Image 1 (cartoon, rainbow, N blue to C red):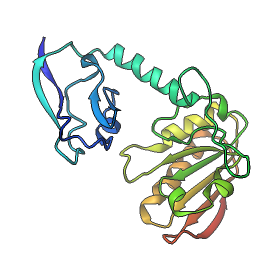
Image 2 (cartoon, one colour):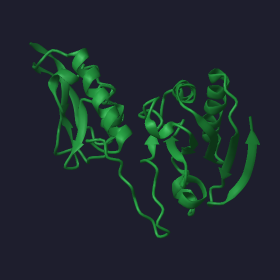
Image 3 (cartoon, rainbow, N blue to C red):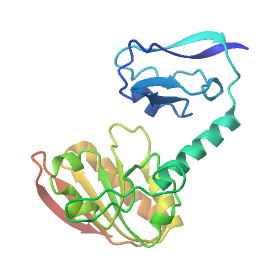
Length: 226
């Protein structure tokens, strides 16, 4: 059939991945540092991926293409979610050694991508961190990630309400404590507000601690909350 579908100019593409993140159907992936349309029937042709492209490499064209298949997209996204939850295809969890022979309990995962029920959540200490904090604070692994399950996000860049996803995680799993790490900038308060809202919606009482990192990489505040 002739329909509207995404067209990618590889010569213009710089492999930034903004389009892949913006594509809710998972139709675009970064392959060999270039954006690729995985399958025609994954693309709905609505163009959510267009606005963020910094090089103008993405456009919409009309051509012969398979019809958009919502069921195929759902299956595709479920498979992607399983791979993210496991750390890699095949169910193996990747561990990364550090100088003190410790390792990550799981890959830090974006809040918007993480499943709401996964084995690593059971009986866990949960860390919810703003994207920038790991770069701003030099001892982030030892002081925050170590012995915790890590979720990351940026309320300014992600145009979604984190509270619903976090609330489901709290409801579906045994979470022993929650640690929030955020920057001192105003936009990071959205992360803390989402966690507080999620706790309220979950109906559970879980120990909560928030650490605020300054723009020069220092902990300027630790506060506890219920």
